[in-house]
Length: 74
Image 1 (cartoon, rainbow, N blue to C red):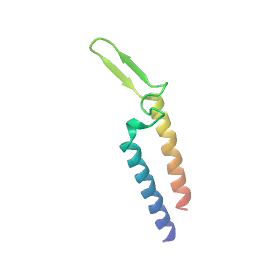
Image 2 (cartoon, rainbow, N blue to C red):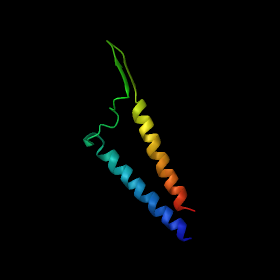
Image 3 (cartoon, rainbow, N blue to C red):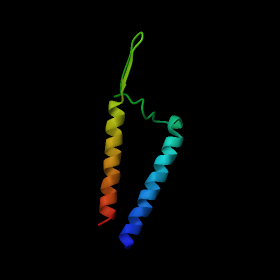
Image 4 (spheres, rainbow, N blue to C red):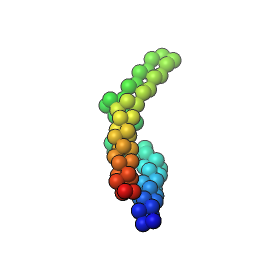
């Protein structure tokens, strides 16, 4: 039962952190969503944006979080 409690506390902290990130998203210094590897094409009446580098970065961060959660729950 103790491991479930620790896991719930950790998940709560992660959710609170994500809430703060979303709240202050535009004020972040590293420009998440405008990284050098993101694809942005703008023509006359057409805009194409694919956040490739941002997607990779978020994937790595979420993978690390889920690995930590799985290690804490064992």
